[in-house]
Picture (tube, rainbow, N blue to C red):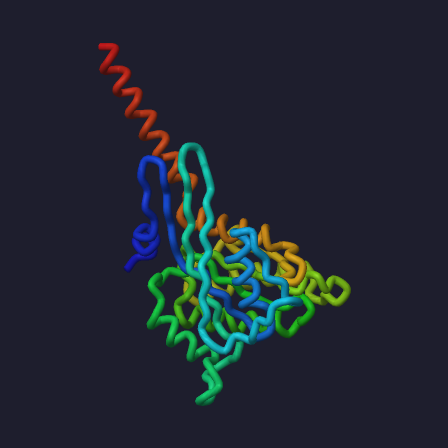
Length: 254
């Protein structure tokens, strides 16, 4: 199935509504805040916030999922993004019996149960206070490539967590920017897919203080707009409508 067909079947348009869907997959080392970030992304849109100090969020040892729904109004259109968030465990390889699921186990389950095959956003998650978790993103990127989670329409977010611990942050902005360029080049070298830098986004959040969560939500929304080219679709609808009205007006004036 060609990528353009895969993406087109996930969007519905009528005279006033546009609805699109797709998957958002979080991967990265354990204890980087993937589950917490997904929970905050899901709850923040409803006015909620999950503070790590008052909530016990266990280490992800299974495939977890949440839902993200966002609405935007552009011209006369109401645009709805309905996405399923998948959170992969940060344990590499396969787990021993009775210890939950590691990454490879969760992938097997993910491929079996997912209702949407297309990954619109791949969220590579790391701890801003741990250079190791940042360096390990190369491993997680390679696993995503090998499992065909990245296509021409996929956006990639480099998500740095623990932003509130500003005095101990060691991952520098120049390293993050170098990571963006590495991802673009590496994906193209591995599978021949060109991911432009405008589809490799960097953002930082604190799951403790809520800092960066609104921007993270906006980035997810923007990723869907880019993948589906929502603005072009709206312009095409408006141009077609204008053309139809002009034809009617010309007929009435004859």
